[in-house]
Image 1: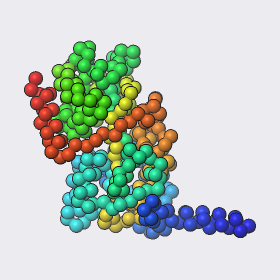
Image 2: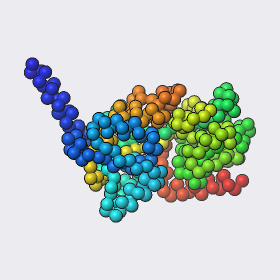
Image 3: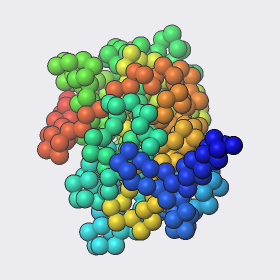
Image 4: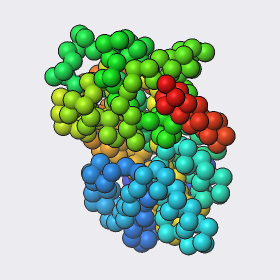
Length: 334
């Protein structure tokens, strides 16, 4: 009887209070009293719908979600912070803009308990931002125009004459993620990465403003292959698949708690839910690759992608400017 009571008491305490690795408490009662959580994020609302609906049902806390590009998220959060009126509790975006916001002191340290199971290579040591999804990049191709047997087998295969004028990719002189991707090719190709980029430019690729239009261009037949996120195979309807590579350069996205969050308990609870196995399964349903062990998007071969992801390094601000100039010269001064 004493043992049963002890178990009941322990369970009640766990339900009312969750404590993270730094001893920060999530008081669920206070979170419920706060009533809502304001989140600024870069993920399209339809991909977050299931996560938010179930969070609201589970905890009775409304999610006010504002979506913009990674740059727009940073600009809005920084503008509010500098004005002394931050309206957000949680921010979600890519590493590069999150790093800029970290420098301004916009985030508070927080380690959600469920994130402890994530691979160490993706964790941030300062605990100011928490990885929660990751975007591996591969070669996508039109399955009606290119047979699987004829598709490129590697990034190097894109330099074959058969793909000249048939490749779509973002303009690396304007698109920072693509510039970072090409720069990180050194991890896969060593010092020959610049030679590879020059060869890619000679293929006369269809250069687009970002990664999002690459897949529609492939589906429409404006290009037969392209460089883009694997998740687009699930998120766009049409004859498109991806190439299984040995390694995938990948870009983690992060969540962070605002240093002056008006609803800090609801913010912590939201982040913990998003990185929990339950939350990770919901975001994965839309094709997102997540960090919870054993959780994969409904994309063929996804379980083989995750263990072969390599997080990309991020260039400094000066390095990024130099890359933009270098890629402008390579791709437009032919």
